[in-house]
Length: 235
Image (tube, rainbow, N blue to C red):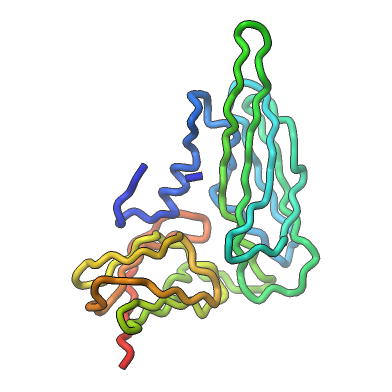
């Protein structure tokens, strides 16, 4: 769902901006009211309003998309298909399937796709499908809210690589690019999240540095100030 950006701009924010672009010259189509959906296991469901910003009726198709690291089917959507009039909104329910008690946050994505009808006669045309793809975070029941989970990441030097681990139960969202400080060497995370329990090994041209500067985003995808995490040198 997601303009080129320098490493100073968190990828989560850039992804949100790009999500509202399409190859069509028509309006943005189906627009979710928030950039992220959070489903709490304690309540078992969440809702999100999706607005048809186009000037004609359209069918809203809603589907769950799994990330490569987690393919477990956790959520049902209702309704999966709905007709939405111009300027109107459709409420979509995210219903948590019957699963055991979750121990960590889980990350999935939801795709909203608007398909407009063809116009008959000599002016017939097909409106291109517009897709919005946003994250869905499923939270364990009774898990305390941590507004700065990126501070829980552990960064260390391992040989000629930088190792980052997430020992916390929280999904950490951040820019793909982080920097070694001092020196400014840029490391590529390849994606904009680190899952609970994950360990990533990052290739680098230099491991010289005392800190890692990262550019985090909150659970709801909003950019915050950069954060310098200590870089541990393993002896």
